[in-house]
Length: 175
Image 1 (cartoon, one colour):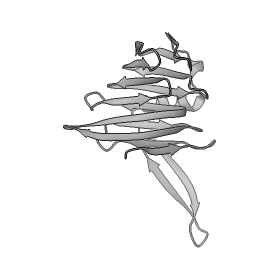
Image 2: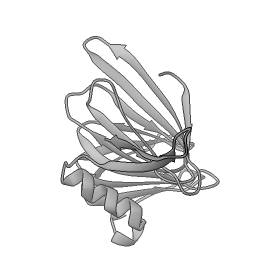
Image 3: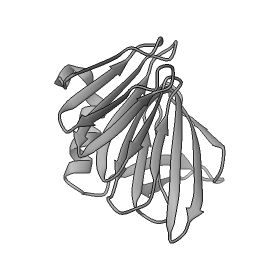
């Protein structure tokens, strides 16, 4: 699971959970991310490098190191839920809905703690701005996924497929 690249298209998404069941990641449409994990004592160190698009992350506390890298930042995470969005050109936004993350700007080494209900916006040049989060920061799909995560209910998607004989069957994925 090192350097695996996931890409989502215009009308797709991807979701995965790390093998230690401590972290869930959902990639929204038109996103590209590289996934890494390595054993660190009794824990699994995890990282996601978001190159473009939006990625929603839910990390349980006491689950080992978890980092989200973007072209302009590194966010260190422990026990939180947040959305990372990387725009064309590298501008990055972190929207924290639970817990806290520490964001380090690569160009200046500036560090900011971003807590629940806060948004950090980092320009492509590395300027950082913190403010209260707004519902308008999230797309409808992102808002719905945050609600589903908060309710801690598993999400199931059902995909219709035709088998070799032309019969309609379904693949169900629960995450």
